[in-house]
Length: 255
Image (tube, rainbow, N blue to C red):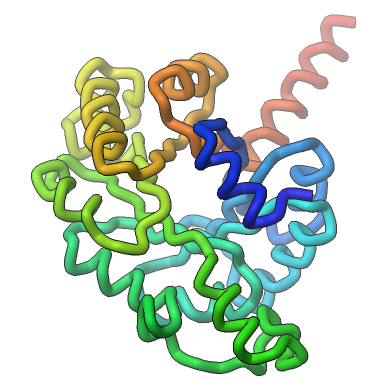
């Protein structure tokens, strides 16, 4: 069972953790990821079809299979962040962070006092619908991961100020959006993209912040793991399923 505490302990020890993005609305896919041994899943509300009614069942699937549920919100709004956490997400991953000011607002929305100003309601799934003692719930809720995505070259000059924001747990690098902003859309192994990711990782390491990245090949995963990136998101559930189906079909045709 991958608990939030064990997950954080592994990161603190410098260990890598692995997990896919999930776009399917079927909690069975989330359970399969957990039973397969992934450490986390990123339930994708930015590019996936899930709404909040579906999200709560996907989180249940993660809990049932012992994998840590992280929600990529559709934006950085207070409502998007607080609803995901109310439903039981153990972390929120916020896309398109552009400045330290925006990063501070995200932390404020994700944390209760004294770390933030998250809207208070304990009659939610995360608090077991009010059965968790108040003081215990608010303390535990503040342990949820805050993950900020940086995805364009325009943010690189502001990186030091973003990394200095208190309450940031992981800085996630979006290589596809970064490649587009560098003029080589989709070419995530292009030298300019690799160099930019390396520079971001180096700055984050100096600031004591864990970095994460998306990768969809084993070679990329190995490259970034060896570079010190710990939060490694490997591919997407629907892509993994498509590749597996294609491999089976090709094998059947050869036979």
